[in-house]
Image 1 (cartoon, rainbow, N blue to C red):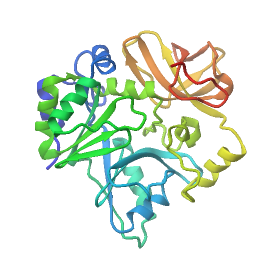
Image 2: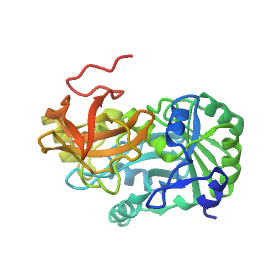
Image 3: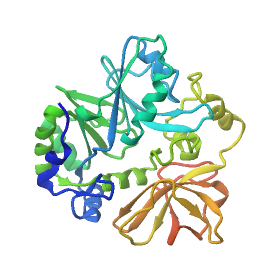
Image 4: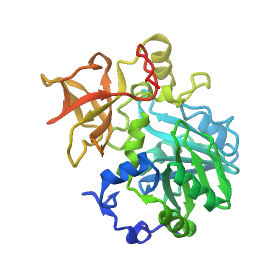
Length: 348
Protein backbone atom coordinates (compact mmCIF):
# COMPACT_ATOMS: atom_id res chain seq x y z
CA UNK A 1 0.00 0.00 0.00
CA UNK A 2 1.26 3.49 -0.92
CA UNK A 3 0.50 6.85 0.65
CA UNK A 4 -1.72 8.99 -1.59
CA UNK A 5 -0.75 12.41 -0.29
CA UNK A 6 -3.20 14.34 -2.46
CA UNK A 7 -6.17 12.39 -1.11
CA UNK A 8 -4.82 12.38 2.43
CA UNK A 9 -4.46 16.17 2.59
CA UNK A 10 -7.37 17.22 0.36
CA UNK A 11 -9.60 18.42 3.22
CA UNK A 12 -6.89 20.82 4.41
CA UNK A 13 -6.77 22.66 1.05
CA UNK A 14 -3.06 22.20 0.27
CA UNK A 15 -1.16 24.63 -1.95
CA UNK A 16 1.50 23.30 -4.31
CA UNK A 17 4.51 25.11 -5.75
CA UNK A 18 5.54 25.39 -9.40
CA UNK A 19 7.07 21.90 -9.24
CA UNK A 20 3.80 20.48 -7.84
CA UNK A 21 5.37 19.92 -4.46
CA UNK A 22 3.37 20.60 -1.30
CA UNK A 23 4.28 24.08 -0.05
CA UNK A 24 1.71 25.24 2.53
CA UNK A 25 -1.99 25.37 3.41
CA UNK A 26 -2.87 28.91 2.40
CA UNK A 27 -0.98 31.07 4.89
CA UNK A 28 2.71 30.15 5.19
CA UNK A 29 3.51 32.99 7.58
CA UNK A 30 0.74 32.01 10.01
CA UNK A 31 1.80 28.37 9.72
CA UNK A 32 5.38 29.29 10.58
CA UNK A 33 4.07 31.28 13.54
CA UNK A 34 2.10 28.26 14.74
CA UNK A 35 5.11 25.94 14.63
CA UNK A 36 7.24 28.53 16.37
CA UNK A 37 4.54 29.10 18.99
CA UNK A 38 2.01 26.67 20.44
CA UNK A 39 2.91 24.04 17.86
CA UNK A 40 1.47 22.21 14.90
CA UNK A 41 1.82 19.35 12.44
CA UNK A 42 3.50 19.51 9.04
CA UNK A 43 3.18 16.73 6.43
CA UNK A 44 6.58 15.99 4.88
CA UNK A 45 6.03 14.14 1.59
CA UNK A 46 9.50 15.18 0.37
CA UNK A 47 11.16 13.10 3.11
CA UNK A 48 12.43 9.79 1.77
CA UNK A 49 13.11 6.58 3.69
CA UNK A 50 15.73 4.03 2.68
CA UNK A 51 15.50 0.70 4.49
CA UNK A 52 18.75 -1.20 5.11
CA UNK A 53 18.53 -4.78 6.34
CA UNK A 54 20.66 -7.92 6.46
CA UNK A 55 23.23 -9.49 8.77
CA UNK A 56 25.99 -7.20 7.47
CA UNK A 57 23.94 -3.98 7.56
CA UNK A 58 25.69 -2.52 10.67
CA UNK A 59 29.21 -3.10 9.33
CA UNK A 60 28.22 -1.96 5.85
CA UNK A 61 26.82 1.39 6.99
CA UNK A 62 29.70 1.83 9.45
CA UNK A 63 32.08 1.71 6.47
CA UNK A 64 30.02 4.13 4.34
CA UNK A 65 28.82 6.93 6.60
CA UNK A 66 30.59 9.73 8.48
CA UNK A 67 28.91 8.71 11.74
CA UNK A 68 29.44 5.57 13.86
CA UNK A 69 26.27 3.51 13.52
CA UNK A 70 27.43 0.00 14.40
CA UNK A 71 27.16 0.72 18.13
CA UNK A 72 23.76 2.39 17.95
CA UNK A 73 21.20 0.76 20.26
CA UNK A 74 17.85 -0.19 18.84
CA UNK A 75 15.42 2.69 19.21
CA UNK A 76 17.95 5.47 18.66
CA UNK A 77 18.81 7.98 15.95
CA UNK A 78 21.94 9.81 14.82
CA UNK A 79 22.83 12.26 12.06
CA UNK A 80 25.33 11.20 9.39
CA UNK A 81 26.73 12.27 6.07
CA UNK A 82 27.49 10.21 2.98
CA UNK A 83 30.46 11.51 0.99
CA UNK A 84 32.08 10.93 -2.36
CA UNK A 85 35.79 9.98 -2.47
CA UNK A 86 36.70 13.69 -2.48
CA UNK A 87 34.86 14.23 0.81
CA UNK A 88 31.91 16.09 -0.69
CA UNK A 89 28.48 15.18 0.53
CA UNK A 90 26.01 13.20 -1.53
CA UNK A 91 23.51 13.76 1.26
CA UNK A 92 22.79 14.12 4.97
CA UNK A 93 20.90 11.26 6.62
CA UNK A 94 18.91 10.84 9.81
CA UNK A 95 19.85 7.27 10.73
CA UNK A 96 17.31 5.30 12.76
CA UNK A 97 18.18 1.91 14.18
CA UNK A 98 15.34 -0.47 14.95
CA UNK A 99 15.14 -4.20 15.55
CA UNK A 100 15.83 -5.78 12.17
CA UNK A 101 17.77 -2.99 10.52
CA UNK A 102 18.05 0.72 9.81
CA UNK A 103 15.96 3.46 8.28
CA UNK A 104 17.76 6.34 6.57
CA UNK A 105 15.74 9.55 6.25
CA UNK A 106 16.82 12.10 3.65
CA UNK A 107 15.61 14.36 0.83
CA UNK A 108 13.43 12.44 -1.63
CA UNK A 109 15.23 13.95 -4.64
CA UNK A 110 18.48 12.33 -3.46
CA UNK A 111 17.23 8.75 -3.17
CA UNK A 112 18.26 7.50 -6.63
CA UNK A 113 21.76 8.94 -6.23
CA UNK A 114 22.23 7.56 -2.73
CA UNK A 115 20.97 4.09 -3.58
CA UNK A 116 23.12 3.92 -6.70
CA UNK A 117 26.25 4.83 -4.78
CA UNK A 118 25.53 2.63 -1.75
CA UNK A 119 24.74 -0.41 -3.88
CA UNK A 120 28.11 -0.11 -5.59
CA UNK A 121 29.72 -1.19 -2.32
CA UNK A 122 27.41 -4.04 -1.33
CA UNK A 123 29.40 -6.64 -3.32
CA UNK A 124 29.05 -9.92 -1.39
CA UNK A 125 27.81 -8.35 1.82
CA UNK A 126 24.53 -9.64 3.19
CA UNK A 127 22.79 -6.28 2.84
CA UNK A 128 19.60 -5.18 1.14
CA UNK A 129 18.69 -1.56 0.42
CA UNK A 130 15.21 -0.48 -0.62
CA UNK A 131 13.43 2.81 -1.17
CA UNK A 132 10.34 2.41 1.03
CA UNK A 133 9.31 6.08 0.94
CA UNK A 134 5.92 5.47 -0.66
CA UNK A 135 4.97 3.05 2.11
CA UNK A 136 5.30 5.63 4.89
CA UNK A 137 3.79 9.00 5.72
CA UNK A 138 6.19 11.30 7.54
CA UNK A 139 4.90 14.18 9.68
CA UNK A 140 6.82 16.83 11.59
CA UNK A 141 5.52 18.06 14.94
CA UNK A 142 6.62 20.76 17.32
CA UNK A 143 5.31 22.37 20.49
CA UNK A 144 3.78 21.33 23.78
CA UNK A 145 0.32 20.87 22.28
CA UNK A 146 1.83 18.59 19.66
CA UNK A 147 3.53 16.48 22.31
CA UNK A 148 0.27 16.20 24.21
CA UNK A 149 -1.63 15.12 21.08
CA UNK A 150 1.11 12.63 20.26
CA UNK A 151 1.03 11.22 23.78
CA UNK A 152 -2.72 10.76 23.51
CA UNK A 153 -2.29 9.00 20.16
CA UNK A 154 0.50 6.62 21.22
CA UNK A 155 -0.38 6.15 24.87
CA UNK A 156 2.99 7.28 26.19
CA UNK A 157 5.23 10.34 26.11
CA UNK A 158 8.73 10.06 24.66
CA UNK A 159 10.48 13.41 24.49
CA UNK A 160 14.16 12.65 25.07
CA UNK A 161 16.35 13.79 22.16
CA UNK A 162 17.78 11.03 20.03
CA UNK A 163 15.30 8.33 20.97
CA UNK A 164 12.82 6.50 18.77
CA UNK A 165 9.57 5.34 20.33
CA UNK A 166 7.49 2.56 18.80
CA UNK A 167 3.74 2.22 19.31
CA UNK A 168 2.58 -0.69 17.19
CA UNK A 169 3.83 0.13 13.69
CA UNK A 170 4.00 3.85 14.44
CA UNK A 171 7.44 5.41 15.01
CA UNK A 172 8.09 8.67 16.84
CA UNK A 173 11.56 10.15 16.41
CA UNK A 174 12.80 12.80 18.83
CA UNK A 175 15.18 14.83 16.69
CA UNK A 176 18.59 15.40 18.33
CA UNK A 177 19.06 19.12 19.00
CA UNK A 178 15.54 19.44 17.70
CA UNK A 179 14.31 22.04 20.19
CA UNK A 180 11.05 20.17 20.63
CA UNK A 181 10.78 18.82 17.08
CA UNK A 182 9.57 15.27 16.49
CA UNK A 183 9.03 13.13 13.42
CA UNK A 184 6.14 10.69 13.19
CA UNK A 185 6.49 7.82 10.72
CA UNK A 186 3.17 6.14 9.96
CA UNK A 187 2.80 3.12 7.66
CA UNK A 188 0.57 3.82 4.66
CA UNK A 189 -2.39 1.93 6.11
CA UNK A 190 -2.16 4.03 9.30
CA UNK A 191 -1.58 7.40 7.63
CA UNK A 192 -5.21 8.53 7.40
CA UNK A 193 -5.90 7.68 11.04
CA UNK A 194 -2.77 9.44 12.29
CA UNK A 195 -3.31 12.53 10.13
CA UNK A 196 -6.99 12.76 11.03
CA UNK A 197 -6.30 12.41 14.74
CA UNK A 198 -3.45 14.92 14.94
CA UNK A 199 -4.72 17.48 12.44
CA UNK A 200 -8.00 17.85 14.34
CA UNK A 201 -6.23 19.16 17.43
CA UNK A 202 -3.19 20.92 15.94
CA UNK A 203 -2.51 23.74 13.52
CA UNK A 204 -1.86 22.32 10.06
CA UNK A 205 1.41 23.69 8.67
CA UNK A 206 3.28 23.22 5.42
CA UNK A 207 6.79 21.98 4.66
CA UNK A 208 7.92 25.58 4.16
CA UNK A 209 7.16 26.27 7.83
CA UNK A 210 8.97 23.10 8.89
CA UNK A 211 11.96 24.15 6.80
CA UNK A 212 12.06 27.42 8.74
CA UNK A 213 12.57 25.48 11.97
CA UNK A 214 15.50 23.62 10.41
CA UNK A 215 17.04 26.93 9.33
CA UNK A 216 16.73 28.43 12.81
CA UNK A 217 18.30 25.30 14.29
CA UNK A 218 21.20 25.45 11.83
CA UNK A 219 20.51 21.96 10.49
CA UNK A 220 22.95 20.78 7.80
CA UNK A 221 21.03 19.99 4.61
CA UNK A 222 22.00 18.72 1.17
CA UNK A 223 19.54 18.88 -1.72
CA UNK A 224 19.72 17.69 -5.31
CA UNK A 225 20.95 21.18 -6.28
CA UNK A 226 23.90 21.00 -3.87
CA UNK A 227 24.83 17.30 -3.94
CA UNK A 228 28.63 16.83 -4.08
CA UNK A 229 29.18 20.54 -3.42
CA UNK A 230 29.99 20.70 0.31
CA UNK A 231 32.55 19.02 2.55
CA UNK A 232 30.84 18.19 5.91
CA UNK A 233 32.59 21.01 7.79
CA UNK A 234 31.36 23.58 5.27
CA UNK A 235 27.77 22.99 6.41
CA UNK A 236 28.74 22.47 10.09
CA UNK A 237 27.93 18.74 10.08
CA UNK A 238 30.62 17.90 12.63
CA UNK A 239 29.37 20.65 14.97
CA UNK A 240 26.00 18.89 15.32
CA UNK A 241 27.43 15.40 15.90
CA UNK A 242 27.16 14.24 12.31
CA UNK A 243 30.82 13.21 11.99
CA UNK A 244 32.74 10.77 14.18
CA UNK A 245 36.50 11.28 13.80
CA UNK A 246 37.35 8.04 15.65
CA UNK A 247 35.22 5.53 13.74
CA UNK A 248 37.60 4.59 10.94
CA UNK A 249 37.44 4.73 7.19
CA UNK A 250 34.55 5.73 4.94
CA UNK A 251 34.50 7.34 1.48
CA UNK A 252 36.11 10.76 1.69
CA UNK A 253 37.30 10.21 5.26
CA UNK A 254 40.90 11.31 4.57
CA UNK A 255 39.76 14.68 3.22
CA UNK A 256 37.35 15.26 6.12
CA UNK A 257 39.90 14.20 8.74
CA UNK A 258 42.69 16.28 7.20
CA UNK A 259 40.53 19.39 7.35
CA UNK A 260 39.68 18.62 10.98
CA UNK A 261 43.20 17.91 12.25
CA UNK A 262 45.43 19.96 9.98
CA UNK A 263 43.49 23.04 9.02
CA UNK A 264 40.27 25.00 9.17
CA UNK A 265 37.42 24.98 6.66
CA UNK A 266 37.49 27.85 4.22
CA UNK A 267 33.70 27.99 4.41
CA UNK A 268 31.19 27.70 7.20
CA UNK A 269 27.41 27.70 7.26
CA UNK A 270 25.76 30.87 8.59
CA UNK A 271 22.18 31.96 9.11
CA UNK A 272 21.07 35.09 7.28
CA UNK A 273 17.90 37.17 7.05
CA UNK A 274 16.41 39.24 4.24
CA UNK A 275 13.40 41.56 4.17
CA UNK A 276 9.92 40.70 2.85
CA UNK A 277 9.16 38.69 -0.24
CA UNK A 278 6.89 35.77 -1.04
CA UNK A 279 9.65 33.53 -2.38
CA UNK A 280 13.00 32.32 -1.13
CA UNK A 281 16.22 31.66 -3.06
CA UNK A 282 16.71 28.12 -4.31
CA UNK A 283 19.44 25.94 -2.81
CA UNK A 284 22.68 26.51 -4.64
CA UNK A 285 21.92 30.18 -5.41
CA UNK A 286 25.02 32.36 -5.31
CA UNK A 287 25.53 34.76 -2.44
CA UNK A 288 27.53 37.75 -3.60
CA UNK A 289 29.20 40.78 -2.07
CA UNK A 290 28.22 44.34 -2.92
CA UNK A 291 30.90 44.44 -5.62
CA UNK A 292 29.63 41.21 -7.20
CA UNK A 293 32.18 38.74 -5.84
CA UNK A 294 31.09 35.17 -5.06
CA UNK A 295 30.87 34.89 -1.26
CA UNK A 296 29.16 31.50 -0.97
CA UNK A 297 26.05 29.51 -1.76
CA UNK A 298 22.58 29.06 -0.32
CA UNK A 299 22.12 25.75 1.51
CA UNK A 300 18.39 26.10 2.22
CA UNK A 301 15.94 29.01 2.45
CA UNK A 302 12.33 29.71 3.44
CA UNK A 303 9.99 32.64 3.93
CA UNK A 304 9.11 33.40 7.54
CA UNK A 305 7.01 35.83 9.55
CA UNK A 306 9.69 38.53 9.25
CA UNK A 307 11.00 37.91 5.74
CA UNK A 308 13.33 35.43 4.11
CA UNK A 309 15.56 33.25 6.29
CA UNK A 310 18.32 31.06 4.97
CA UNK A 311 21.44 29.08 5.68
CA UNK A 312 24.40 29.69 3.41
CA UNK A 313 27.88 28.21 3.17
CA UNK A 314 30.08 31.32 3.03
CA UNK A 315 33.78 31.89 2.87
CA UNK A 316 34.71 32.60 6.48
CA UNK A 317 36.34 35.95 5.71
CA UNK A 318 32.91 37.27 4.67
CA UNK A 319 31.33 36.63 8.07
CA UNK A 320 29.87 39.85 9.42
CA UNK A 321 29.82 41.75 6.12
CA UNK A 322 26.84 44.02 5.62
CA UNK A 323 26.78 44.00 1.82
CA UNK A 324 25.85 40.38 1.07
CA UNK A 325 22.86 39.41 -1.02
CA UNK A 326 21.23 36.98 -3.43
CA UNK A 327 20.23 38.86 -6.56
CA UNK A 328 18.15 41.82 -5.24
CA UNK A 329 17.67 40.30 -1.77
CA UNK A 330 19.88 42.04 0.78
CA UNK A 331 21.04 39.87 3.67
CA UNK A 332 22.14 40.36 7.26
CA UNK A 333 23.59 37.86 9.72
CA UNK A 334 21.56 36.20 12.49
CA UNK A 335 22.44 33.88 15.36
CA UNK A 336 22.81 30.16 14.94
CA UNK A 337 22.27 28.00 18.07
CA UNK A 338 25.76 26.51 18.33
CA UNK A 339 29.26 27.90 18.43
CA UNK A 340 31.49 28.26 15.38
CA UNK A 341 35.25 28.38 15.84
CA UNK A 342 36.48 31.74 17.00
CA UNK A 343 33.01 33.05 17.86
CA UNK A 344 31.26 33.60 21.13
CA UNK A 345 28.51 31.18 22.10
CA UNK A 346 24.99 32.47 21.38
CA UNK A 347 23.32 34.32 24.22
CA UNK A 348 21.00 32.31 26.42
